[in-house]
Amino acid sequence: MKTSWNETRQIDAYLSGSMDTGNALLFEANMILEPALQDKALWQIKAHTAVQQYGRAQLKKEIEAVHQKLFTEPEHISFRQKIRRLFSNL
Amino acid sequence: MTTAMNNPDQLIAKREELFIRLYKKAFPTVAGYISRRGGSFDEAKDVFQDALVIYYEKTLNADTNETAYLIGIAKYLWLKRYRKNDQNIPLENIDVSADIDDKSPSAKRIMYFLEKAGSKCMELLKGFYYDQLPLTDLASAFGFSGVRSATVQKYKCLEKVRETIKQKALQYEDFME
Image 1 (spheres, rainbow over the protein chains, first blue to last red):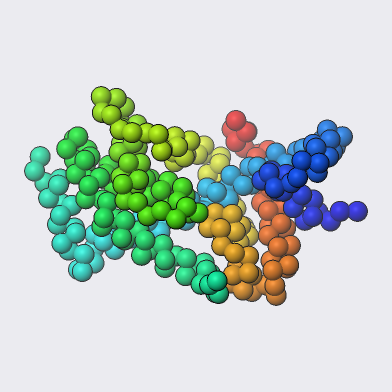
Image 2 (image 1 turned 45 degrees about the horizontal axis):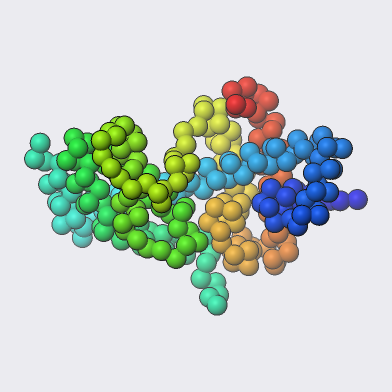
């Protein structure tokens, strides 16, 4: 009997392509026999998409914090002026 | 081999340094480029930040630090945004599929729920899959006794996120497309 985290691991191995050919074929056969497994695999792809989007959202926050630093802290004034000049001569 | 140099906090600090450096090296060029084409400061900021995200994701495992690549991505995003096809920019190295994705309202709600209800899981999964930190470092950062328990927890979290999304998606019908 597989524990559920082990099944999740197997699905992950299949999705990431790290399963060898024999096991991947077996896994595909299991998905046909067991629609619930296929369903889990589909939702696991969405879980990965969500993790990717979460990671990206956090990264964007870090980038915005850097932007705020560069455009407010005194030590970056010359950088700031350089950028401002580019948008002032319209 | 580096030990304990890759925990999430150290990664954030390293990234801050990287982004400050890239901002200083590349943003003036990108801002000048966009300004000459009638774009505003806010548009330049937007395009540049999206370019930084793509650049970061693309070069996470490649050992490049090419400002030219970053500037190329930013120019491409600018042109794509305004469909100014009269410019010729070499695109061969830029993966179009890496564009920043906008999400449907229900996807945003699900994300909000995942952040509120399972932020520790999301942080662990992000550390492993997005930041690609070594499991040994994640194990100590998250207080697990070792790699094995971190591995088990990682899959339990993935399962939890999977089941949460499935359950929530049934409530928000526009999530499925």
